[in-house]
Amino acid sequence: KGNIFIYSFKNKDLKKFNFYKKNFKNIEKQLNIILEDNKIFVTDNIGYFYAIDYINSKIIWAKNYKIPLRSNVKLTKNKIIFADQNNNLIFANKNNGEIVKRIPTEEVLVKNNFQNNLTIGEGTLFFLNVFGSLYSINLNNLKINWVLNINESLELDLGNLFEAQSTKFYSKKLTVLTNKNLSVLNANNGSYVFNIPLSGKTEPLISGNQIFIITKNNLLVCVDFNTGKIIYSYNINQKIADYLKIKKNKVNVNLIRVINNNLYLFLHNSYIVKFNIRGEIKEIQKLKKQMSSDPIFIDGEMIYLDKKNKLIVVD
Image 1: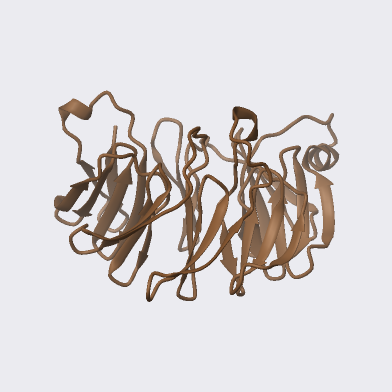
Image 2: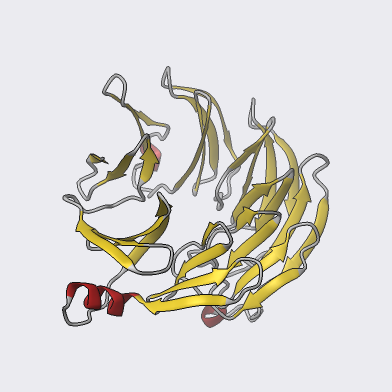
């Protein structure tokens, strides 16, 4: 519906804000949101881009680009960065929403669930578009440093659509997990540190010198961040069955997080499986309420929405 809720833990106050008028009532909204100070910046799949003062629940400014916006949103100094469904990379003024620069990139005719992805690291924007091209752009002068196409299948038919998880910048390197490969690149020039045939169903998780991935066939894989060597690969279904001493069943992993130097796998059925960094199960527990959102962690508490859109806080 496009509702944005702002909840105060201090005052136990809940505000609701909706930008959309009645003529957009029957259109499903897909919002990309980023916050800074007391402002919420929003882009949507209708083509609107707007800023909200969430303290006073009022619109600061709004723009209609008349084309669906299709990426996450990034902030840098006085600019907001996002992309549209035609793979145009857009830089806009943070104060009024006016376009500062538009960089056109390769367009595709057939769209899938993958959205254009933006990552920022050390004064550089990395833009991975749905065609499979990765751009490095200097944020000071907005000029392109280098371009690399990581899509190994350029046939634009329904069976060969490019898909990827979000890119990660860490230790002057860029990690990209596609539907075919795990790649770690030198962020300065785009050269490959390594490229191995490994696809994942969740975002790659980097901790220290290790990358943790959940593959589509339910393997927990640990890869050396510097060399690409696979440290271990364990079947999650078998690990859970051995720990509980039950028959092996297939589980559905929604996401993976590192918390207090342990790996936490959040399953679709509301169970949490706690692994140590070596890949051994330490604990399995069940949440009282099933998740319908990714959790966030604040001051030792885990916060998420349940299936009835109730806000759940867990110590």
